Each structure stands twice: as structure tokens, then as C-alpha cells.
Length: 128
Image 1: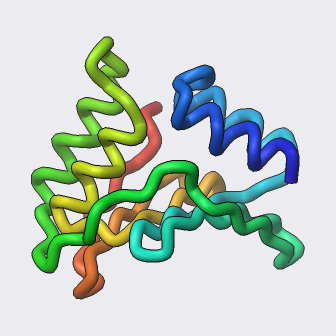
Image 2: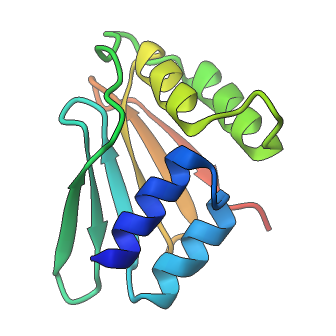
């Protein structure tokens, strides 16, 4: 649980980047996690069925009704560039405004599936 808490906090305070967070979670035995913008929680999953659910330290605004897949893809590129104007809190706010209700990160599948309220999706593969 401590590693999950550390990684969640690190996403918001930028003390670790996405690849570093993934590495820490994998090393701690997690196989993925889900972010739910409507419930303001993040759930970390283990292969044995156990999970850790944590409240996110930042609540997004309401999730827009329409899912903007191209907008979410653009947000992902912004996050990957990790420029000085990037923050995870801003990413979350903008994703919700683009109709992203949440996303599922699969370490095994090496992908992230972003989804809207109508189950529309946008899939991003981990960079090689």
C-alpha cells in the first residue's frame, strides 16, 4: 500500500515521472491500475486479485458528456513531452473536460485505455 500511495503522490507533485512510477509499481508486484475521474479514486491491482483503492488528492471537475479521442491523444503527447508547463493535475482536469471518465493502465498489456461515459475508448501503447 505504501508504494501505491507514494506513486500516487509522486504523480501529483512531479517527484517521479510516468516510467519511474510504472517501474516502482511493477517492482512492488502490481500489474496495473485504474483512475476513475467520477469517483475521484485510483485503484491499484495485484495479480492475486488483491487491490488498493486510494482517493486522489485532486478532484477534477465534472466529466463532459462527449468523449474527444483526438483531444485525449493530444493530452497524452503533452504528458509524454513532460515540458515545464505540464502537471498531472492539469492533465486530469483537461481529460475530464474532454469527456474522459477514467483510464486503465495495464503493465502486462503495455497500454493505457482511456474511456468516456459512453464507453468510447482511446488506446495508447507504452512507448518502446
